[in-house]
Image 1 (spheres, helix red, strand yellow):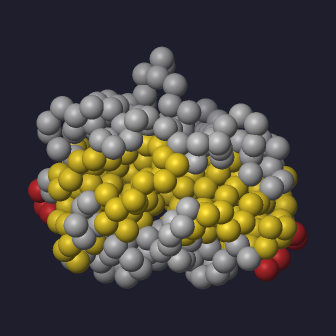
Image 2 (tube, helix red, strand yellow):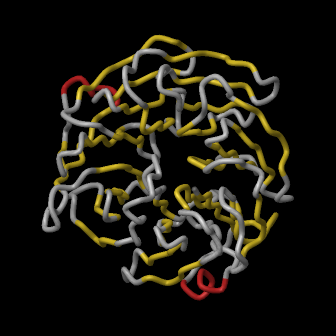
Length: 336
């Protein structure tokens, strides 16, 4: 529901590395959000369970659950009503990255994080059992996007391909080749998807006719040099795209490609090898964008004015993973 809005605020205390900050009102339903509310938010919970960087996290769309992936090869499940850890699983052989919930709250999808296996895995959280493997990529998977309306999902890889899959079958359903490492994401209706191969452009495809090529190409501004896209997300309204690069976050009109805002998070120090690009996220009402920065702060910008409205501190590491909750006054961030 786009009228619902989530929460944001990192605690001011100094915490150890590899923590998850859950900020907001545990158990509270989302309410209309404005700049005053965003700037007043405070940390609701901090977890330092992971012995390694948090490389991805995800909220379930309809259940009050949060799942995180750690570089210690762990998958942790939290309740977003109580703020408590519910379960810990491990993927010791393969590692875990790009973790997302499926439509079923008891299962997740993720990519490997080792150097010898690039398969994707469909895992039951209920009994820690693999339901299906998806094999085909020959390079590290850098993004996974599940269709909001079906069992289709996209994976993009350093092997310069975007693959279309169905959770019900191990066979690849479609393949797109890129000129460089791509990323891809479904829109909220599951009818189109956006993909970029890193050439300062985002392309839009019809899911039903993707083999015909993109029906629209949206160029990105190159005033600061070529843009290497690291992440794409649609707003819940479907009207905007959030396109993240190594230096900038672009908010662009999903229909005509007009650049509405460009935000510049603090880049990580040159010596900090994250291995995972900084994540940016729309609020459910599409009115705010948040992202972590190299200074350890989590910043929120207004999509209406383009102004920075809050900067929350507390992470000692770089907050790589950042997401708003779809149903609660809550957001979660995880650091390196």
